[in-house]
Image (cartoon, rainbow, N blue to C red):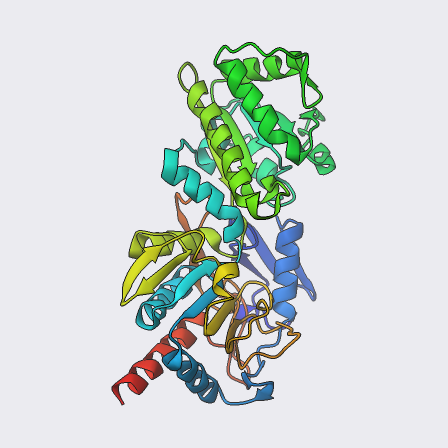
Amino acid sequence: MKNLNHNAASLNATCPACGLLCDDLMLSATPELTLQNGCTKGIKFFQQSFKTSLTATPMLNGKPVPLEDAISAAAEILCTSKQPLFAGLGTEVQGMRSVMSLAQKTDATLDHMHSESTVSNTRTMQNSGWLTTTLSEIKNRADVILAIGTDISSSHPRFFEKLVWNTDNLFAKPAPQVIFLGATDSSHAAKAPDGTPPQIIPAQTAQLPEIINALNALLNGKKLHADAVAGIPLATLNALLETLKTAKYAVIVWSAGALKIPHAELTIQSTELTIQSIVQLINKLNENSRAAGLPLNSGDGDSSVNNVSTWLTGYPTRSCFRNGNAEYDTYHYSTKKQLMECDALLWISTFNPYPPPDCKAPTIVIGHPDTKFERMPEVFIPVGIPGVDHTGQMFRMDSSITLPLKKLRDSSLPSPSLPSLSEVISKIENKLIGEVQA
């Protein structure tokens, strides 16, 4: 791997492949790229990123053009658009700040590619509030971890290594008890270093709402006239509640994306009700003990994008600008809904080569240089990968801190390096302002 920055033997890196943002990685190129402390997702991300070309070319209708021509074409599309949709939004903090500025000037709708999963968390927090924790608190205080409907490791591979089995904590506490409710088979991988297996309570995803409602009823002293709920004996549910009630710091983990109940258009509502039941369980436990929740993020900068949107407008994504003022609607401003109504689509995906959804309106793609298309968009501008080709900032999934992304790839090549998303967006905005003034 000849283009590691400054030809260094090894470089420290922050990994943006999941919401943990592990910052203890060491990359080396001797001669192939190796990653110390890397997980499967991190290795895949960096290997894929370093294989991408630094000389990818902007295109208009599939034909290579200079960058300035592509920027002019994108600005022209947005200048004539009355209802543009900015979707995908796979970027970091600085990229999203630039996108927000352009969206305000073009009265665009904003929606992240993973908002179908995160909107249920957002609406639960908005409607009833919730008590959540941070990764540091889990590492230093948690003595019971209950994962509902997720094995955690599939989406956040180093969760247990860094937060659960890590003995470097403030209070020298013993390893937490780990319980999976409705987990997949891969949860067996969460064995403690001493070989202690986790407790697994099998259940189908569609059964989880019934089980959580039963736990809430039992916790509130209600009597259930049944011997089992969704095939789980009441004795098992009572024992689970006793473990949670006697814990010094119980943490309940869930992933909105993994809680999708297959009911077509009712999927979001079903997921939201399930999360509300989890939050009610946490609230009740806190009357006499201590418990907190941890919603897992979906990735591609979703935590960063929603935090930036919220601090700039007061709303997370699934928002829209009207005459420069922000509005928020989780239904009407969804990508699915807006694809039927928009007259221009700006698709952004810088971490992964995700193509845009099918759209009849003129499409601009600013994204990963390896993006492949079934139908070439009107404009394609390849940009650098955050944390590889340029620096940046990202919010960790608990939104408690931001971590810096470093420039790792050496761009001192004969050909110019790929621009960052924020550089391209700023140029489009400046061109747009010039066209409006003209």
